[in-house]
Length: 251
Image (cartoon, one colour):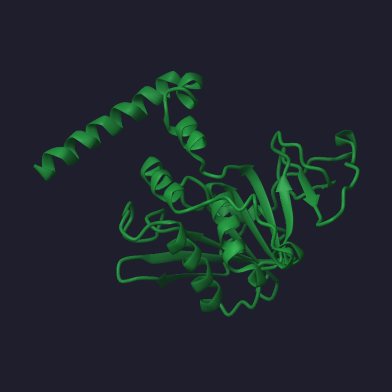
């Protein structure tokens, strides 16, 4: 599922790294996680174990705080959800979502990775539960959303529309914070680019823009396959088996 979704969504997304719209940049304060990239900004802790954040503000080049001056923290404790629900976003797909934290808190949206991984309640632990009203949801075909594993109508523009549909459904005027990890980075950027007035800030961790070379590294034999050969062999064999079954069904 992850490989199939990666290929499909990569076809529908162009990373906005050439975006020069000053209005867009003025409205979006990007909080990008330090992931081996040469970002310039002031470092701040975001409450994630072994994770640092760098804040890049438009038109300013800030001197980084020395890493030795930072103290790592664990994730925040996670209790039972404030509420759970389902939202039909098409004739095919229905999304499952959960709300955590403070009922009248600042709205925050978490976008999971994969693509295809789904959310876990521990993801609410990225956010201070005394401050944020956290929204977790399983993207199309993932987790408790139905139909699970479906690729029909499952592409980046549709998922961007889902984020907006969920915001309206919950009566949220603007997301104070959108946090995306891995594939969730791509979706967060796509959503913010499409709806810049509805996102105040982004936190991007484990940055991945779904470029061809990144997809091949994740699902090809020259990337992760070299690091974890046994696991990749099992994955590759399962894909070959599924591909054969699909071809037989088509015949």
